[in-house]
Image (cartoon, rainbow, N blue to C red):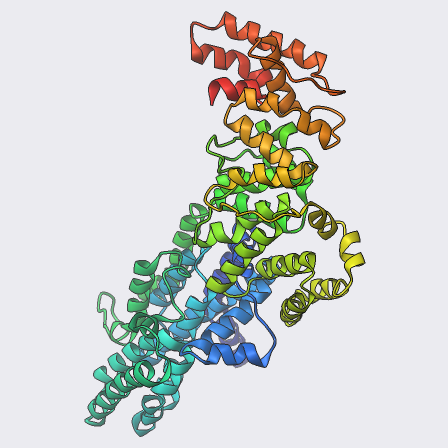
Amino acid sequence: MDKSIEVMRSTGQRTNRILKFFPFLLFFLVVLFYFFWFSGYVFFYQEKLSLFLVSGEFLRENLSQQGGFLAYLGTFLTAFYRFEILGAGILSLVLLLVVWFSALIGKKIAGKPVCFLPFLVGSGLVFLHAHYQFQLVNSLGILLQLVWFYTAIRFFSGKRMWLPVLMFPVWYFLTGGFAWLFLIMISAFLATRTGKMRWIQLAVLLITAFLSFFVAKEFLFYETTKTLLQYPFSDLNAGMQTREFVLLAGLIGFFPWLFNIKFHRFTAGSALKVCWVQLLPFLVILVLAGALSQRTDRKNSHYFHVEKLFYEHKYHEIIAFNRTFPTTNKLTLFLNNLALAETGQLTERMFEFTQSPDGETLFLKWETIGDVLRRGGHFYYTVGLVNEAHRWAYEYMVMRGYTPEGLKMLIKTELINGNYKVAARYIEILSQSVFYRNEAREFMQLLNNDEAVNNHPELGMKKRFKPKTDFFVLSDAPAANLEPLLMADSSNVFAIEYQFAWLLLQKDVSAVTEKLPLLEKAGYNRIPRHIDEAATGFKMLNMGEFPQLEYLRTKADTEQRFRQYYQIFQQNSNSREQAQRALYPQFSDTFWYYLFFN
């Protein structure tokens, strides 16, 4: 009989342990599943936004500022975002530890298991992380404050509390602006304790905190007050969710008071109370799952998938993907047009996709905004304006530091220009990264070897199309650079494609037709489809004198299709909407349709 009771008691204890840990496991799995299957683009974006270097210099640079250690740690973990499964695992683990240590703090202060607030805080951070700009360093900063606070109240009670109090300057130096969260928590904790010593410790803590800030501002770092208060937190790396993050951090800061609140709705030991406490985490996780189902950003998921393919030079896959999943996002279409140009299809297929008449889907105007500055230089690289592509990459590096793709662009442009000494420096930096060492080794083989650069399938082509004569590049008017670029080299097929594409977007049929001889000079063996459509319309509607061409001709089937198009248009000329509906099935991907209905 005694053995049966002991077995039942042991079974009950195992069941209780399972019930105790199961909400944490479920939370981890829900977060892991969501970020891996639905929001993997978050890891791609953030990994491309920074570059962790395995070097003493990089560590020293980070430690030259308060909070630099936390930033260094965040950059290190973000490097593993290169693999989505690792990114999802790291983020899920950090968020789980936030919940876990919040629960430990609650149990230590309240003297009993606390579930609701820890899971509420963890779920709030998950929701914020669903925004692609909300970076790991924010949750990592909160986690470190929770760990240090739990350590302080668990192991340094009474007189030993002087250690975390007097160590605050060191903690501020290590974790920067996030240390203020620890200050609030430990202050609230001391205020709720008993004994005279707590008030002395609290006063010393506040004085130490003030002196830490004052010395940092006046003697050590010479940063702005805002930077000293916040770094490494910023509005940008929080995805402009500063208010939400501050509210969440404020909730954590008042844990010592909140966990001391007593609720007497249920009598102690009530079975209903126990059941309710056990169910609360599952209810929070259920609400979180529902909120996340509405949080996935399909537009950003689409764009970052295209950008990933672009960096991998999978241009045909980009075109096929955008054809299958049409988009109106201008940055996505900008990369799609680059892919069309790199594969020689820009004036052949551009109207299969949405285009912006102002040219913003063809090129980006100079702006110091990160997204524009980081990507806009790729247009200049494609058309052979290597120095301008280098300028965009360099300016972005000055503003935001090293990034994988920015550094690779700087290496490519320096190799093309033959600046091998500078290129070697950039290659050395790339070789100190965690996951880009293979690329660094490939670039290393091109150093001081003009022949190898000339024979390189990518760099050799860009070098051949680099203009031999200099001219001022107008970054605020990218289209204006195409004419002088063609004057410098009329065989530059990429510049020709973009010149005609721009004229087509402007609906300048006369200019398109007038420039047809450019195609013969560049060695085209046929007129690309959209140019052919414009030229055919010009010729058949007798819009002016058609240029004399040596061997290129408009196609007979294009002329036949134009007759069909024009006939349907005239039959429905009384109603623009009716004509558009009638023409869409057969002609939506033609220049003619764009000309009349965009």
